[in-house]
Image: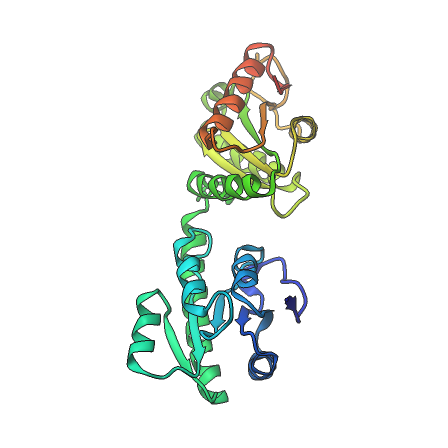
Length: 313
């Protein structure tokens, strides 16, 4: 059993109420913790370890997990071990909430990666204080992590963020048997633009193109990143090649419609982009690099057959 008792998060997760996942097989314990924390946190609940693992991976991911130890089938120790061995969930703080109060029990939980240990019967002030402290630390860590994943010039995701998202989505699509698509995008003749207008105007052009690409994506899971120089990448989960090509064409048209005047003597009066598309259903025999290589080859074809076009192979 799993449920969420508060509304979906605000668009900016850094300003949303922290999300706490409560995992306990006893409904009475869930109700008590929800009553203690419900005014200050969004609450998501699970009554077994398996549901907890699924909810910990699902977006939006919890900021903190309150985990009971004594549960049937999969106890809290095993649940914590699996959370900490999964790269998608390993950074979510786990607090054990349990009636087991011996030093050996506490040591075992902390050795598995839990950050704190709250014993029953529960004291509301203690629960609120410990959850608040760890939630604040998690938000600060998330902020630092997000800053490390942002391209300082354009404000969109950087290559590091793309690599991380690509790995995560590849694994998720492999489990869900879904297709994953990637667009590789290059600003046509950008060197000529830089040579004519200077690097200051070139930086403004990169920022405008990045903003237009980001605004052109319609799903929260879609990601645009600066891949390097004047090259961008767009990650499209659960998207086949036909849909990816349509999205690429829409983005191409939107960039052209911005009418950013190009350097004199270029093939096109305004700045344009070339787009290479790729889509694969992830498989054990394939790697994320295979998806990148296909998109790169199609981008090369687009640029060598006239530019300002989309190539999907």
